[in-house]
Length: 278
Image (tube, rainbow, N blue to C red):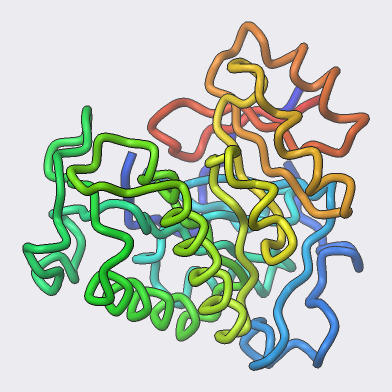
């Protein structure tokens, strides 16, 4: 089994909620141009990740260890550009975590969101509210966050809470609204030279899989819906699968590893400790 990330390295800024090595050729930037000096993909091209990549998900703060033997790091969008640069120097690809379906009071741009786009409170997360994904003002705010990800040279986007349409958001959102927003996000990311992975929202996979570069799931094995993301694996795109339930993790690995699902075990705080499949 894997273990927790070691001490030393880059100190993370926090957010919601082995030995080193170089990234293998199949984790490099995709077609359409060469990798830019800062490690990012040039405009008009973006990273094309493949199924089976190893990863670390760390948006809860703590030490970000660039020597952890994984291909991909998923970290918070507020992390400094120097953190992204050090991960690139260590041969890693870096995903930018952004909540696209909620407003968070602690974010530096929180005051720029118009009151009209803020909906019901997000259960269990004080200071967080659902947002109206149909509103142009909301999309304008999210586009600015994507600009930050691009400026910091992130390789891809993790759009958290993109399934807001299925929650009690306070707005009459439909699945069609969710698909439209998801496609808009993909277009915006690709225009900035970044990939994008689908975050949960398995009910819209069939509608968006052709324009998404992979998926990221939470407890899909524990809750019995990993197969809903099989279309990504079939297209040789990654499914970064995080489980929070330790007593099923061995079974998840036994099921998923031969299929190239990328399982890790994390605690809900998403700090540095991580367990990998054997």
